[in-house]
Amino acid sequence: MKENTKLLEVKNLKKYYPIKKGIFKRTTGHVYAVDDISFELHKGRTLGLVGESGCGKSTTGRAILQLHAPTGGEVLFNGTNLVNLSQKQLRPMRQKMQIIFQDPYASLNPRLTVEQIVSEPIIVHKLLPKDEIIDRVAELLGLVGLEAELMSRYPHEFSGGQRQRVSVARALALNPELIVCDEPISALDVSIQAQVLNLLIRLQKELGLTYLFIAHDLSMVHHVSDEMAVMYLGTIVEEGASDDLYRNPLHPYTKALISAEPKANPRLEMERQRIILEGEIPSPINPPSGCKFRTRCPHVMDICSSERPELKEVESGRRVACHLFN
Image (cartoon, rainbow, N blue to C red; front, top):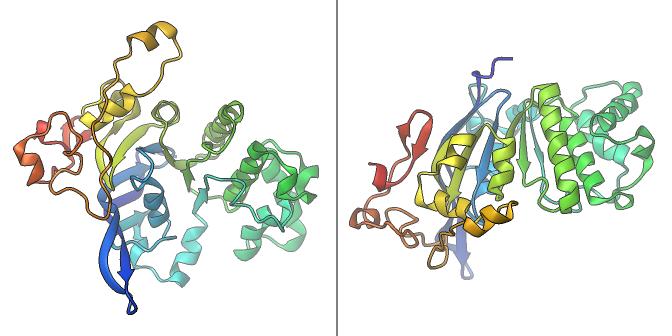
């Protein structure tokens, strides 16, 4: 597999949710959850999408998979624009794109056994004859580190980490090319997070998977990602190679996020200099004009209130949306 082969290309993606009021449910405004973002993801690679809660990361993942219909823009998967496809045309495409949800307690049907949960996508897409399905489920459970004997159990009989492994097995059932990992370890105990993270890394190497990894923990995303994109209030403010972005952040918001990361080394923790952002995150219903970060930026200029900065390449492989670099 060539890692330079483009698998996913997102162009000017928008997702606005209408706000309706009154008896006649008139639209009085919009929630600008995802506001004109673009990025690429190559086969066999991992793109980490990071940012504070409510910045639009999960909505981006769902809009890419067409779980939420985008308001505008294009989502090109292997060159096919998913936005223009009907539900019938999307059906075969869905085999190649799967998602691992954040909460393993809510994403698994409590009335189904593990065998039924993992086999359901295989049955729906008619991939295997009935007499081969159980063997496939056992194989998938083995891939994620669970015993085949557990397939007759229900979700409530498992720990959080085991449930998330079941979710991973379900996502792998259709042999996907792309998996959207929507904060897959944030609901788990800290002692279990590393196990699930290492599992995802191992599966990527063995199966050649491509990940869009959504999270708010920069150090963890840096560990698993080849590239990182930082979101703020529905927009991407910085993008680049994971190591470069983490070691040398350029955008003021990225610098603040990384400065907030605690250090394991006590000496480094004492030397850490926090960048405290003033004010609160603006509402996505009424975002600031121009640069959305200007109300909290320590380097705000006059141009920031009138012109929205474009996401431009400022170094090889580094893109930043900030007037400081224009």
